[in-house]
Image (cartoon, rainbow, N blue to C red; front, side):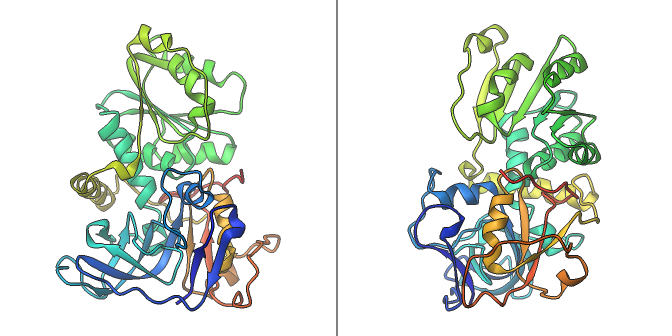
Length: 367
């Protein structure tokens, strides 16, 4: 099969296409998935660069979130059979490939309402948002939540889930299109975090009480302002950070506020099952929803995944490894993607739709 392999940690140039990778064979409690779409998340780029605490043994194939069809099951697998439509929150063999191996407890039935591209966008974004809100922040209906960086994959998921749970939802985004999308996905109000006085606007909106919960995507920039925005007993949940920041601890003392980090893969098997059950129910009844419109479709070859990784730094994106002819009617003429050089690079056309989470999105901003 074809797969992207990483033989050394580094920039996108270390992603190498190989066309002779053996198809994995599922063992006990494992399933083999024919990959129809794979999510490309910021964490994939951090691991590939070697800057993440998770450092897989080399060589490896990146990619956690896939959606596809069960090709085979190992011994002791009773929940799935060949032909089932599924999505994952983790893979064993890597998702940037035509087939992926996964433990059966990390695989979930894909609702009929969702296609494979949407299925590949569920895993890390929606499970992380649910863990941040319900497990880490322990939100209560009627509380206020600020999603600081709401137009990305986790941000959109957080807006949808928070609104469904009865919270007052505030979000930030830096473009008009991004702000529109944040409002469409559950936020009551949205602010432009590129404006110099946007913090003052948030304070005016929430009043003296402050914000009960902040879901923070870029703590190394925003954490000090977050502490200033919090209510008494407020909580900052750090989902993302790209470096250090200096804060005044006294800001937490006067309000008895707290800062808590969240990592999805600290979740237990039982917690993952709880998250999946809640999200599945939300998708079935439309409280966690998709929008049918795809904002932009771009030409993709398997070796162009490097460009997708660059675009995923601020927004999760999804790549499709099947349906090679779909791009023809949708590709914008001015779009040109660089690809990793390979004599095998002429095959594997598909599409990469730039809509984080399950909703229509603005074009991700390269970092």
